[in-house]
Every structure is written in C-alpha cells, then in structure tokens.
Image 1 (tube, rainbow, N blue to C red):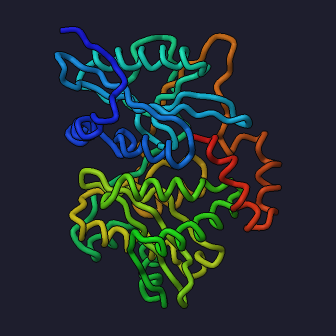
Image 2 (image 1 turned 90 degrees about the vertical axis):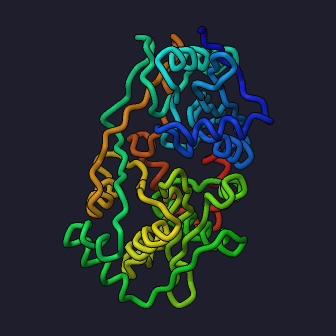
Length: 347
C-alpha cells in the first residue's frame, strides 16, 4: 500500500502525539507540543508532516520555518531542538517524509532543510553532518548512593561537597519559578556571550507540556544561583535549558542542581537521564563526561538548494568571535532585553 504525506490538522494533535509516544525512537522534539510551543514562543511557524498508509499514521516529520535577517532562512526539524528528524515505521514512509519536507522547503522559499537525527534520507542530495556534536544519556541509578557510585571519583567528591553546602532546592511550575529560572538562565548565557531566548518560549513550553515540564532551582541565602527547565518523555528526563550565575561555580550549585534533578526524576518514575548534546571540545562536553556519561556521536542531515550555502549559526565559528566578546561586555539588563530579538532566529 502506498504512503501519502500530508500536513496534520490542528485537531489531530492527540493522534500524532500518541504515535510519537508509542514509537521507540520518539522524543520531545517530535511531539506537537514542542512545535506549538516554539511557534508561540518565537513567532516561527511550525507544522507537522504525517505519513499515512491506509489512513493510519506511519511516520511524522516536525518542521519549523526559521526566518532571520541575521542568520538567514531554513526549514528545520525540529526547530530549537537537538533532535526531531524523520520518525517512521519503515523506509518507505521515511523516504516519503524527507522528500515532502524538501518539496515544502522549496514551495515556501527556504534554501535549506535541516534534519536533526532520525532516519538517513536515501538520496545523495542529502549530506551527513557528523563529528561535531555528541549526545549524553544513561540510565538513572536506583538510589542516591548508587547514583554517586556511577560518577567518577573526582566529580563524586564535588557532588558530596555540594550536598553539604548551605543550598536549598525548589521545584515548581508557577510564575515565581519561571521568573527565577529566566533570571539565572539569562545571566548564564550572557556570560557565554550568546543571546538569551525569549521568556515567552519557556512559558509556552510549560503551558504546552503541562505536567511533562517543570523547573528546579537551587538557592543560596534565598537567591537563585542555578536553575533548569526540564521536560519529561516516556520515562526520560531532559534538563534542556539550565545554567548558573557567576557565583554558582564556587558554590557548586550546578552539581547540586543536576544531582537533585536525578533524585526528583526517580521520584517521578523516570529511568533515564538525557543530558542533551554538546559540541566536541567544549567545556560542556567535558563536564558531562565528568559525570560518567559516555558521548554518543550525533548525525544530522542537510540539503541545500543549488547556489546556496547552509546557514552558519555555530557560536564557535571564528567569524562570531568578536561579536561574542562584545556581547559579554553588554550590561546584563541590555543583553536580556535585546537577546530575544536575535535568539528567535537561531532555531
């Protein structure tokens, strides 16, 4: 039976979400909630392609139409995510989705289509991008002591010091939790020299994912010093947007943050901790290895129209070195106000 590809209607969200949840390789980045939150939070239009056979869904491809005067235009699966490429039951459905995705890119005036993971397109026009990023995930241990035992000795000592430090942990989903998180996260990315995402993106994620999203914040003397917005999917916790203030490192607040999240995730019934992706050779890459996570190379797929170059948004690109240095020098209040105007185009 042939495969038909169409754009999912708004009233089909539950059916699409059910398909993603039932698929072994489904992720938060494939879920309609992600695409809708990105659209509401950044203004970048999203849609969901579905492959159907005999009326039944046999594959999905979430797409975000990213437009930016500074960074260019691209169709991305999945926008603002680190995964979310073609998800399908078989090769025929996967091929139909990637082909329709490329047709849609051309029809909407996008010179490139980025597939973040998923099935490899069976077409030489697609180019694999690998050797740049790795993912970090492993099972959660059964207890705090078992979790500590899974961490290499040096990092384990840091965690024990964090557990003995005068720090408190809060978990919530309300406005107060969101405000504390954004204050910490904005300072964290500013220190790295990158623009912060719009606050409304995080608000939209909490609204769309409901109980599958929460915020964990570490405080010192009442002041938030580290915070993370996490998403939950099929027994996996994904701490996606997290960071700490300048003082967090000396306080070992980030160690407390992630160890507390592991404990909280176990209490929620999670069995797996997904530390997300990091670029090879970065401090984040080394930090995650120090926690005992083994890097798993990631492969993305890119197709670009003839005569066009893929967009460049990698902050480690030498051409951005000066801009990053200048951004770090901006007052935090100004960077927090101006950052979302730039970051919404990073996708």
